[in-house]
Image 1 (cartoon, rainbow, N blue to C red):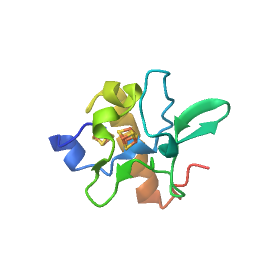
Image 2: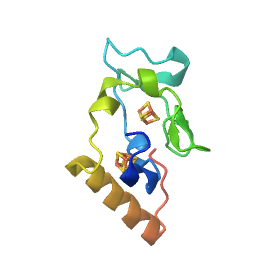
Image 3: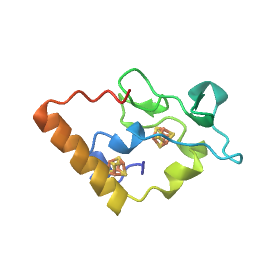
Length: 100
Ligand code: SF4
Ligand code: SF4
């Protein structure tokens, strides 16, 4: 997730619902991580959002040490637009947003 960017400011941080696979060089606080299918990933809360998301301020609480995959996620890039469209459609249809 980008921080303080115009498009992100009108978004529910839906990229922070995606599975974030951690790399060996990532320095995220360990208590924010877990193991999923044998991979070291960011943990998510029961509604599917990354536990590092500060939902009150809608920003990343570990922004300075956020994972590499988050740093590479391009606001308004194809994947950003895809997850936003999917989220909007699910919300419009009333489809539960739980991931698993
Ligand atoms: S999905 Fe895109 S617009 Fe929304 S927070 Fe993530 S990068 Fe920003
Ligand atoms: S680490 Fe930060 S930027 Fe990455 S998914 Fe979690 S809240 Fe979003």
